Amino acid sequence: MARQRVLPHRPRTTATMHEGDVIAVPLDDAAWGALHVVALKRSGPVSRSAFVAGVLPWRGEAPPRASDVEGRAVVAQALVGKNLFTDGLLEIVANTPVVPTALPNNFVDHGIGVTVNVWGWRAAIDQVRAWRPPQE
Image 1: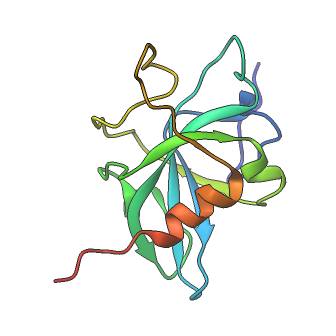
Image 2: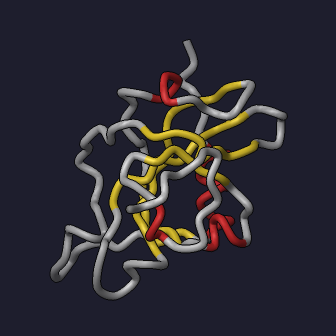
């Protein structure tokens, strides 16, 4: 029987992650942002070390809850490594269904001419920090 995860969770590999996991990202201004796990591979190359994550269009005063980000589609996404947790010290704090987008998915889109987006752990955090809500 598989052990149930307790959140917040800082995985060592992708084996304990799930599509839809929400990763809390502390921002410079004491606010919070979030990444969303869009896709995982369960076998083959990089299956235990990388995943596709996207920037959720959300800002808050506390780490995100599922109800804060539910129904939001990511605005950018790329292949990210497990070092987001080991070196970046981020944590999974919730899980909510992934909203489909037309953004390229490195695990699905292959072939000549396909752009492959890859973010290191610092770049992934910088992508979240760079997102700003639209001006009203």
